[in-house]
Amino acid sequence: MDQLVFLILSIISIGAALAVIFSKNPVYSVLFLILTFFSIAGHYVLLNAEFLFIVHIIVYAGAILVLFLFVIMLLNLNKTTETGKSMLPKIAGAISGGLLLIVLLGAVKGLNQAEAAQAVNADMGSVKNLGKILFDEYLLPFEVSSTLFLSAMIGAVMLGKKNLKDH
Amino acid sequence: MHSLSNRSKVVVNKEMTLKERMYLPAIFGGMMITIKHFFKRKPTIQYPEQKKRVQ
Amino acid sequence: MEIFLIDKIVLIVAVFGITLLFALYSTYAERKVAAFIQDRLGPNRAGIFGLLQPLADGVKFFLKEEFIPKHADKALFILGPSISMTTALMTSAVIPWGNSLELFDRVISLQITDLNIGVLYVFAVVSIGVYGIMIGGWASNNKFSLLGALRASSQMISYEIAMGLSIIALIMTTGTLSLGEIVQQQGTPIFGISGASWNIIYQPLGFLIFLICAFAECNRTPFDLPESENELVGGYHTEYSSMKLGFFLFAEYTNMFISAAIMSSLYFGGYNFPFMDQLGLPHNLVTILGTIFLFAKIILFIFLFMWVRWTLPRFRYDQLMRMGWKMLIPLALINIIITGLLIIVLK
Image (tube, rainbow over all chains, first blue to last red; front, side, top):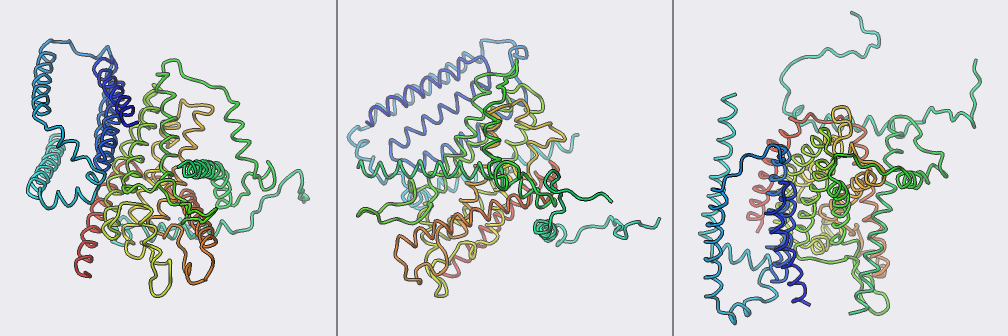
């Protein structure tokens, strides 16, 4: 059962990810990206990480991609407004993507399979456990990342302010 | 000019007080008015069934 | 296992049917409330008191001509209302519609599924609901539709933040994310009255913020800018006709019903009612009475939605954004801080 669900989800996520790249219309790309995120969220459920699943949906599908869609609809990009296609972004994208793939392969290769299978128990991804670990073992990284968010937020406000003064 | 309905209000462009800026009392007042109308008797005359004599 | 499945399927069908029935009759109630507030009688020709009016409207929607504009994106044009309707119905899965029934020697829970992240699930479904409107508005290939869709989505994501923050304060007091447990906790006695320790007592400010955000999320007046007919013709559903338009309108009423149910469960005790354990009634009867009380609360909230709609004028767009970002979000943050301080002091 789990195997079957995993297979279906994988096919959907890979197919949707390919469709993101190959669709001509940017709005379709974003919609396929949403589908990709949903199928990846489905993988989290299979791994018993419910909290991660729901947060993934709220943050990525519910907030970030709405903004993506928002901007694309507002710009109303279509074939006629598409700028000249240069090869440079494509090569850069291929190189960075390839590097990421190598890093991931290296990380997966070093993984001890028995240990990984043991780690997946029913309670692992629950909110309670996650909260305990975040505010106990990983308190410092957690707080550091929250200050990072705060500085990003202040930066966004400052950028908005500056634009107001110019006009 | 003298007001015809005796319900005219002179508009003042003063700063709103905190109570006014919260809007909630005004919203509540408005809702009280509408609920009063909700329970009022309706003056509708349902024509083909009910007929009112024209004087 | 099979019996369990049958229980759940019966429950799902019942909840689905009741939700649709409520949405159907909300359209009738809306027209009646509007009429009564404006000193009119409202629909009263189809059936007694006009009670068959919603059915007549439904038949009309089905029989009208299906029209898809020539330059619209056909697939997305159909996808939009479908997403709206689906997400509107999905939330009902985690709402506890009642306590448990003891029938045929087993205990049947009147909640379809008690996810331990129920509150977050509701939130996720609400945040996905934006897509229906956005996709529908964009696919119509019409400036008014696009503007309506953009307004709707920016309004909804702005008010989602304040809504989430007001729920965080509630979760701090309850200590759980499961809707079933949150409702159960509100059944504990307070001042010797059982079933009356409703969260509204602990979170009045949080409830007010949640209520305002619920109005905004449902695109109801005073926040119905996405479909403001005097500037945008009809907003995101300008180009829609027949049952696709019906789906958009139906989704709005379903959302209203669901958010009324969520507000009753989170802040007004759900199926709990005062003196529920002190009357000495059998368990099943208390459960049924509780469900009736829950629906009474829901109907009161739906009436509030309509009452406000026919009382208040619409906000201007900048007022809407200022209220969301500069008033509700700071207020919700202050509410979190006060709640946290009180929890520390009282412990």
